[in-house]
Amino acid sequence: MNADPLELQKFSELAHRWWDPTSEFRPLHEINPLRLEWINARAPLAGKNVIDIGCGGGILSESMARRGATVTGIDLGEKALKVADLHSLESGVQVRYKLIAAEEMAAQEPDQYDVVTCMEMLEHVPDPAAIVRACAALVKPGGHVFFSTLNRNPKAYLFAVIGAEYVLRLLPKGTHDYDKFITPSELSQFIRSAGLEVQGFKGMGYNPLTKIYSLNDDTSVNYLVAARRPL
Ligand code: SAH
Image (cartoon, helix red, strand yellow):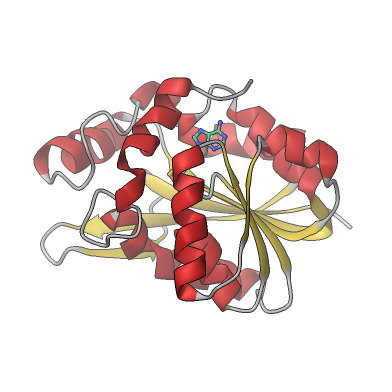
């Protein structure tokens, strides 16, 4: 199976704090409005059939459902999905959560989704190219696929590992494994090999003084990529 049990365990141990905006998941809460607007500007979500791969506790999934999309969230973390389900009950925002691998979901529901999102997940799996292929299989012809991950270079190591985990302590130590970071050119290659077209990149930055995240054109550390399946 294309999953690392230690990676799943890391998220599992923290799962009960997923919706606490002051917890280890604070960065995901803070970047969520930025990525949501970015996605919605490219693929207006109202009325769309959306799948969120590696959805965790459902921060992005719920926010897309609030925009009027019909959302399915999948993950291999059982605890995170339980938290996601509970939160959805509490908030009244409906999302269909499933414990299933992306590859298996792609075999079950090919060509079904207008929008596929896979955020902050590729850098935690053994074979990210296989996840990209699964996303390409899930999306309808003409549909959109959005990824975000971490670039791999000395600056990314300094900012995303040393800075975020050791200096600013935004994330628990050991959250990210530098060797699994993915350069934009590698991700572009995965996307094209899967039969999708790269539409554009966006960088994501954090200002430690103002504690504000923003989207920009600097893809050297955190970045997002928009792709599309040809019609
Ligand atoms: N996408 C969410 C959560 C990111 S945290 C967000 O951005 O808000 C990373 C998530 O990836 C965790 O929920 C973890 O359980 C999940 N994950 C890690 N490896 C996975 C795999 N092989 N298959 C599915 N999900 C995986």
